[in-house]
Image (tube, rainbow, N blue to C red; front, side, top):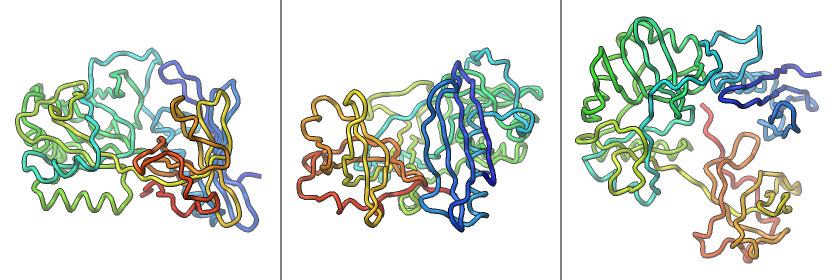
Length: 358
């Protein structure tokens, strides 16, 4: 019998998904397992615990997982904590976010060395814009559609008249831009001044702005810390002459806001082709046991290089606590996707870079 169990549903923006999570006994310890998928379809399964843990640790993981899912629009019914209301019609708020232009870690040195750019942590949450006016708080997702947020988050903005851009992480909102304040449009102002105005809003909202590192030394210190903490990445923003412009600039040379994700790479065993031969299942060894670590898409042009039982080179952002690769892609940076110089038993689970969990 499960110690903790919950079934959550999400019907936001036309979807109809289910997510189940439970803390179950495993020998003298406990594991956190989950299932997800369409409400009327077959659910996929996984685990958030690499190996059984103490009861208190499993319950803490379960509570954090449930909070994260609810912050993304999942709900469980009468026992759910309070969230802002939505009539389910996906209203267009008119708000549109300024999106970040992707760059590589090799590009990062350009922004680290230039005093024209500031740096911030790239948070791993849900992009949310907030419009507050006369005690009414409306939240919008990255598509500009109205969405629900925790009531405790909305409550903090009821005393202000402003529009914020930021990231929602479980029940914590981290604002990093101020688009409007007191009826004044700030989008044409420099980011340096928009961020300063955002920091000044803390006195009214109690919500701290995402810290901004300025200067080569401070930016490098932030970069090194984020790498050491296995953070998702770093963001660079031009401090002067860069208005808030909704949408994304594809040309890196013309960008005013840039993201650098901290990818990892490794060699993993191909355990089989998935249906349709568009992807393969991957594994890594934990001692003598071959553990499933997810799948990777294989473009048609690369399929001849991929063989069941062979070893391939894969790039990924991080591995989840259930050792599933997040955002994996084939990686030919070492010269080839297939690694004939590696044997399957050499592909160890211990090589994984795991998700940073605060």
